[in-house]
Length: 213
Image (cartoon, rainbow, N blue to C red; front, side, top):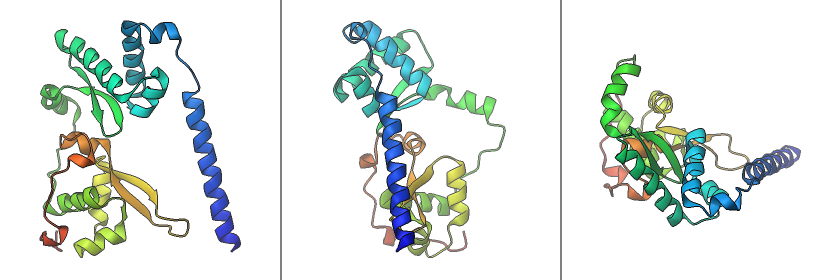
């Protein structure tokens, strides 16, 4: 009982710390003179996205005191300026975040410049593991292994290294096993904005899994 009580207290403490950090991060208020001037507002929003790289849309909503639809309009205006200037930069809404990235036409050249390692071809088993996580997340390694009827340790490590999946926390206080879920990189790679846009596949039980892969 003492162990359970300690676990709950630790969790409550972590949640309190997270709330404090969140409130500290959004406590600052942008001057009304900026919020009332669209050109200045877009400059500051662009700068925030540039500095943070990936910004939860909720944070932008709080900072700029506007709705999601307004943020999308501002982003489209900024992107329009990028396109008119022939810029290689664009801002995208991916999942619940707004990110600054590069236009697709530059991917090939940049990959050749910066990717020193030979690209690994994603195997059927790895793609199947990723599919299971995408459609069933969050879930543990044991649950993934149970669906595949094979050990997925290697594939999970590779997908983590490639940035397609990440930890999603534990299922409950007593379960020490971490769960897996997909990342914004996964959404970007497959050209979708959210998990709701995933194509409707057949039931996972109909997929053929090769235990030797």
